Amino acid sequence: MSDTEQTPVVLFSELGLSEPVLKAVNQAGYETPSPIQAQSITPLIEGRDLLGQAQTGTGKTAAFSLPLLSRLDVKAKKPQMLVLAPTRELAIQVAEAIQSYAKYMKGLHVLPIYGGQSMGIQLRQLQRSPQVIVGTPGRILDHLRRGTLKLGELKSLVLDEADEMLRMGFIDDVETILKETPDSRQVALFSATMPGPIHRVATRYLKDPVEIRIKSKTSTMETINQRYWQVTGMHKLEALTRILEVEEFDAMIIFVRTKNATAELAEKLEARGYSSSPLNGDMNQAAREKAIERMKKGKLDILVATDVAARGLDIDRISHVINYDIPYDTESYVHRIGRTGRAGRTGTAILFVSPREKRMLFAIEKATRQPIEKMQLPSTEDIADRRVMQFTQMLSETIESQDLSFFQEVIAHYQEAHDADPLEVAAALTYLVQKTRPLKPVVHVRPPRAEREQGSRRDRSDRSERPNRSERTSPRRGNQPERHRSEDGMQTYRVEVGRTHGVEVKNIVGAIANEAGIDSKDIGRISLQDEYSTVDLPEGMPKDLFQQLRKVWVCNKQLELSLVNSNEASGSESRRKPKRSGKPRTRARDKARRPSQNRNKD
Image (cartoon, rainbow, N blue to C red; front, side, top):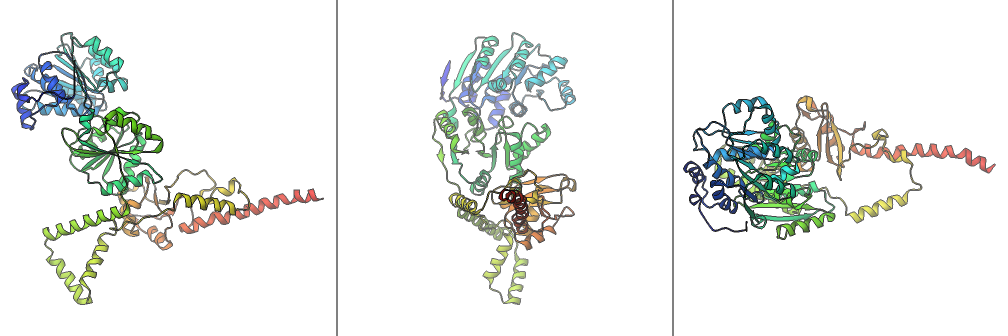
């Protein structure tokens, strides 16, 4: 068994790869193989079975693709190489990689097969007799049962991310597929961990395998700058927004635990002006592939994903990974941050940790054998400095690259007509430009927790008696349980425009930001319904601004802004209403008590 973190430096040209495969590798600019590649390629070319244990991001795909492609007979129009992957995304990724390595092997066809894709499309592609098939266990098994895929002459079989297939419940399907392959086939099994069921599969189906174990956790982490933020009283979304303001990132994956959280957080980031999209198992395959392709092409900057949905993603642009929700185990953490800092590139990983999650932080540090540095959130001054720097840079680039003669004439004419100070004119123009994204961010300050608690206690002590249930229920909600809880410092408003009118989140954000002068990042959660939408805005909206927003047009509809479940015309009036409405009920209750009290006196 090879159990090492380092291998002797060798070149791909020394590993016995076929000429077409080596040509593709050289054209891609690769010279030195990674440890898993250096140790796997030679035994696989020799036809040996292989059992490899290595983490994600170590180059496993090339480790098995290059040697097995070198052994293929391109002239034989039949399946010769089968790769099983746990997820559709990983199957597509592996198929694309194999296709790139085989670009000079004329007549070779690579076919990805996975659930969620039309069976008709796959049947037509199978009729082309592909030599290489990459698929998920469930769909491969479907084709075997239909008789549309035959593996009787298969030369090699690869089990990629076997531990993940076990975790997702595919291990029985994998064994069924293995039984459909000839005894002469070569098997390569790769897994980040080696639990008992995986080891039993290896013992049963691999013949005298070469065993390789790559301790790559530390070497993989060295290219990633890891930091954590201690979750405090500040809302996580506000913290994330501040980080996005000052971090220089190309593309980013934000990990959350649930499918619902991906959509909710992506929507909130869109409302704050960031190009983002969810990535989860509830999305249809076309939507998931579209999101990944947009990320690759630079049309999307942020993916909000669950662990399984992001498995196998390898996008060069990803410079940052943020663990918005801490993972359940250390292996998930390693897989998550492995989406950045791959193939020698550097990356940044940020972890949000609440006080009760500190033990998991210590476990992650122990597993990666690296300390994770505590970070301080950017202050409002830091954000202002960043915005000013970006603005001045944009100003310099515009002066250097644009013909401004016409605009100079306009300003010169204004200056002459109004005897205006040039600096004052420039300041006014700057003000207009930055209205939707103020250079000096508007901060809605909440009093410190101690002051809030003290004020709350003072309010309670001032009450002559504890109000009953009906008094505590706000009349503007119709005495119904609260269904929507606004974020701290925010109030929820309804606008009379929804999906049926063609509205999108960005339309509402743009209208409110432009008309109200509110920074887009200060606009909270937006929920689109069919006939209406709701939006969270900072509390304390002035009455004139409220009336102004009611008349704003979006998608040929006036917003007709109103507080949720309120008939009041302004927020301030609605907030005063509950205090007045409690008194009659209190007096009625007191009056109801008086007869009994009088009877007692008698």
